Image (cartoon, rainbow, N blue to C red; front, side, top):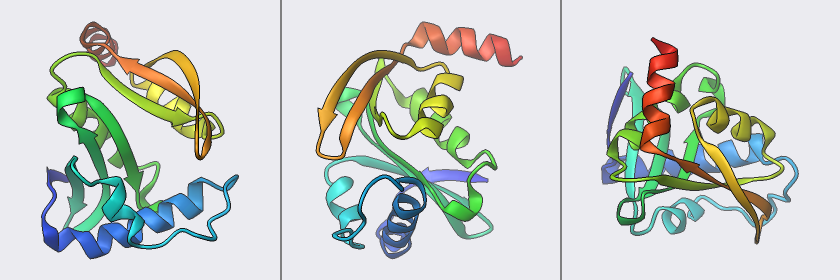
Length: 151
């Protein structure tokens, strides 16, 4: 698997992947108004990394570089559970210059477990247009402890 920066050639496929992943994983929300172009708005002004293998795009992660804020991490439903999300998350965490942050929807139990497993900590709750969320932080010291545990 290769993690690389986004190029414009990725946009059509990642639009499709983003829509398919939301439909497969955000089952508590109504997908009625979702469209392919939602991807464009979600990643606007963000850095994006793409995971691919043998020329096939498996997923992407988008973050606000100046804020160390992971905004999106989406994997093709066919490739979930195969380490793609972990590889993208690790690549993002390595780019953080200080404590990283993200918001994880409260209904998204599998994502919460994924981030907790990777050393993220819940710091508070809030409300968004998609429902309640958990604000999670990833501290550099946590990263070191997690790496030591995995060794």
